[in-house]
Length: 153
Image (cartoon, rainbow, N blue to C red; front, top):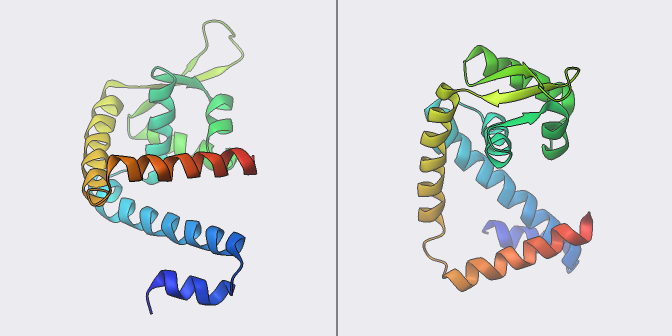
């Protein structure tokens, strides 16, 4: 029995439960795939990749509070992730020029190089995994996931 068949058997007709269980399963699969094939070989964690993505989205620097609101983890987890990334030289903490009470996290040259490598490998691996889907199919899945996101938030 494959995983979708197992999920359908477990939920016995509940579309909502089937949707959530399938999403949880896909998330776990993608997390495992990312950890084994992308993040671990390049010496970072998925959480660090998430921090890099947020910094990229905010132009290379962001307040810790901003980062915390955009990550799924808790702020204490974020603190540990940031400490490790500072220690590895990927980011640095600086005082915000506009608000001297605020700490801003900023990507370093070393962090930027690491992010480019990881992001390139990530894009390559994702493209390979989704090669069997047409652009229209990918767009349909995206539309459905964005709709789901809007409805549950």
